Length: 416
Image 1 (tube, rainbow, N blue to C red):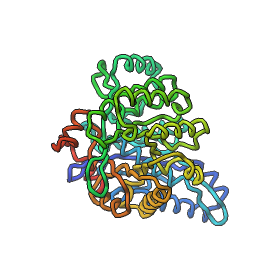
Image 2 (cartoon, rainbow, N blue to C red):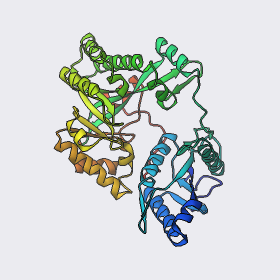
Image 3 (cartoon, one colour):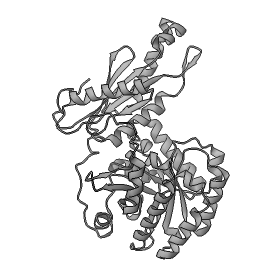
Image 4 (cartoon, rainbow, N blue to C red):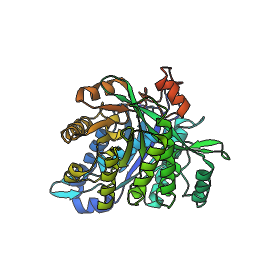
């Protein structure tokens, strides 16, 4: 591996590290025989190399175990994107001389943190892999302190309920721009928890899954809807605000009056509100009826994380939606993967033929923005345009013509 594991590279960059272990190799060897088994390993290594960016490196530690360095990656959220792509590519069936198999493997990753050396980060990845094996998970990612995340806190939901009552949840806003003219056309509202006791901003990764599987999902969604609508009223038309709606909320009968009452109370034109629905699978008929009714109010419906779910083409054709958002994992890999580029282009063409607009998430460099414009993408969203910001900072950065205070260039190294 060309990157030193003992210290940052000469450019001062830090790297995320990962370990992948193939499982059940003895059974595969017994089933295939030695010659076919070698082809099995070669195919895995080929796919691994194809799924990584050119700047990333991997090496075989022992037979069936591989160490990875993700060049310049310094955030857990970016590791999640890389891990999702690896899982997607490596889980595809493989044909070995007439035998159709699937690779069985698990992964552990860790992000650089504090004063830790690259060697210590690599060791944290080994701990993450061990945890994945113990918990029988496909992937475990160490947190920003190099520690494998703990099990869900049993006190989380009671504390979250109190936070909701005290108004500790806030929306950060990430700008969306018109791909052709590079002007801001709206923003997505992303929830954050300003925790007064821990004195930090908690991102959704720490609480959203537990909340979405509880009765708190409904009051949380209603609270965020009203907060986003109230802010959007202060922006000049036709700027829009997008709010995520968990699929579970669509199954309740009262989401329609909640949205209608909020729009009427704050006086917002319904066309300026976009409700983003994650593509996790086919929605039940009741949810589809709710979407139709919401569109009847004039609200726009967007399919979030498009391309990662299980929806059939006929379902996509019939889904009452105005917009699709191409998942960031495809967009961020466009410059290094012909397959991902083709997927993005195909999604844009498909959506346009179905009379839907397209938003590309994960736009992190100028070239990707230019390529998406050439493909006919309608809107762009990502760190190249701007990171999620508190309301006042978002206004200063994007609506008042002032440059935002930029955090370190997290993506420049990643995309070299």
